[in-house]
Length: 197
Ligand code: MN
Image (cartoon, rainbow, N blue to C red; front, side, top):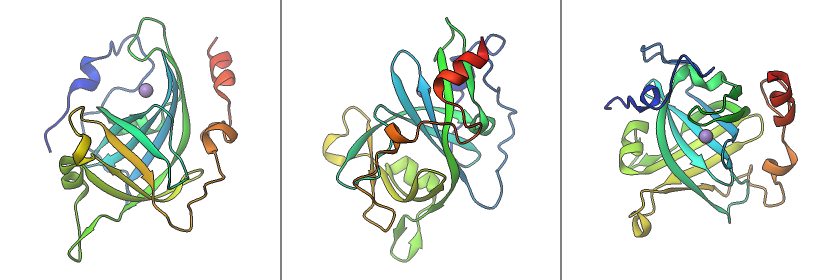
């Protein structure tokens, strides 16, 4: 897959606490990782990141993930982030790209469940064609999710994230409003901000 270099092009790495890329496309281990950052920038949003071929492929989720299969959540593709970013939590200073508070809202591993004619479609291929299916094993978010570019509405390049209707689906849960602490440090957004002062 072609390397996306826009992460460091968008940032002044001397002025942001965000990690720079080590340059090595290291794998995190047996199971690829995913992370969902909560990011209070100019707009509060979530960032969904999936490890694919040594980088974190990333989508902005304006409303975050849902556990309700009837909810379609917009997923706007954004620049690749380095693997080191999976653990990043802190405050990006004023004036820097993405200025604001960043929380590790959820993280875990995932399994590629995108099958076609008895074989698993590689994640890199699913990313290219806009058709990903993953089983997430996070602390808050679990089970199957479809992440895809709708063919009837692909002019803007946006994707959709939809919970699959499996035993982890739950229309009554609303984790983005009820589960608002970091899975890394247990802090709220306010505590992350305060600790930075
Ligand atoms: Mn963001």
